[in-house]
Length: 176
Image (tube, rainbow, N blue to C red; front, top):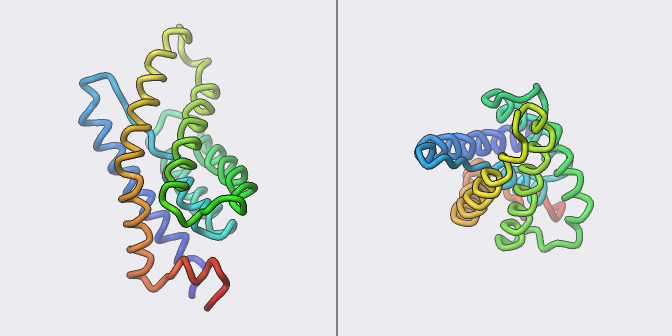
């Protein structure tokens, strides 16, 4: 199998997740809410792919998220890779093929990414203390959406990879 095939497919799936996120943000903007689903993309790539493939996917995904956000270039990619390293260091102790474990990891990573991005960008806000109620509301909205669409995203991603001739279960066990 071509070495770029799996990362490219998963990066496209993450772009689809980003598209769902942006459309949802557009729909709920009138309520002064926004959702962030980067933790879901990071969790799938970190738990289900090899470390090298996951890193390739998360660099592409991070740059994709950076392109539409008013942040310094590479900020999402840096935090996505940092989360990938942390998850990879503990993934041997996790039942990484289980959807519930993936959702829990995605929720924790999503909250961590939201806090890290906020900490990196809080200096831009003229009244940083007014930011916390909005951050809490956005975190709760993001958690709710993540729990609702997370199982779908994991199943859809695995199904698309199977349709493309990639079996993650065989690849993780070293069976060719």
